[in-house]
Length: 620
Image (tube, rainbow, N blue to C red):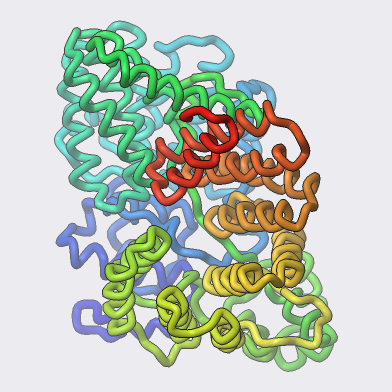
């Protein structure tokens, strides 16, 4: 229950975007931020009031911008969207691809078609289109002055016309606004208009650090700002300042496993080190660059450095389930006819259009359809269902602690999360139960066989066995994927590698059957590609292991993540060892080591270092 100015608001029955609106209210109130501070230029105050009460549903990108003005990211939430809503979200990825390829004609066409996917009248979308037109102009003419002028026009969509006087006085800014400001500052720098620019960028750096308290949101803009400020410091011969801000930008990227704009940050760091006369650090920096360059090379991805692209490109890592597919997959798994499922709910023709993605399901009817098929779930937030944003932050922290082996910290966090959750909700019971099983198994209090038995009981709370002959009959939610993954790992450790591979094959097929691109399953995809490729190699299915491993590397780059790429490279070196290709084996192992070192994956370093020394009789 959430209370707004004395009026009780029951979140039950609210759809996804409405529930996020209520969560926005809770977070804004907790932070003591006034409505006008996040609404100005994006949405009217009366509209925001209705959004925060769960009475008005607004589009995903506008709601995202409101959260960003609080310095928060909604990437950590797995959301259920219709096929039509997903098309709108995925369309921006197509646009980014055309910019990355510097494809003027394709970008021009995509901009023209954009209004068909989003409400161009909304300020956040109007601003986005004008910013794209600025990039389009730059691609065609390479004219920094024209690009700057157009970007200033874009900023006015959500800011006052005298923004240049106010913008640096630290008001609430969403990610898109910050990136536009950075392009403006970059163009000014390229044009030699640097008067007062250093001080303005220093203010922006302080704003991002202070206001973007969610590091998932901070990493999308802070390293870019640090790079630009570092470049200007370097020109002003402030070498120590340039090096310091460069290091902070790199730390932000490393902490969050991000890869953009890592190459540019390393290049700046190398230049600083050269002027500071630090030769040993220069050598280390070059090795990081060589490893990063190799990652792009083996995935046939261009590494051309272009900061206009980096400023515009979003490292968005949202995760989605498409409701249309969920209905179709569940119906088929239950072996229900369309006629039986839609009875007393909707017309059969309507259900057919929903399953084909030609119609968005009515939210009320969607819940009725899902409930009839045994899925009682009103929210689609991934790991847990909660009313408070801070609980999702704690879940993220818990997941990180557990993956790093910080078991005491993980256990304390899990206890705190459990106390604040409604444990009558199946997904909450599932997540907490899974955490307790992991803890017991890690301390050898239960056998892997017993752990798997208990994990399946947790899985069946939301994904019970069906009449379908498919092992995994629908797209798993994130907790469900995590359970499947741990079951597979336990099977592998017990020598049942074929059973483990069967699970990963089923998961891959399920993901690839979906309309959703794997980049929108960023986190599950990381462990899936690592483990599947590793298990295939252990089973001597070498060519398939190599293909999956390289697919995993491409997944890393699509998701702007570099932290697990080192592990995948190291796993590929084992494949090349078995294939009798020592040059490739050495190259992949060496670069895998340096990428792991760069991202602080210390649990792998000793193993990789020893393997290299034993095999090649020299230190890495």
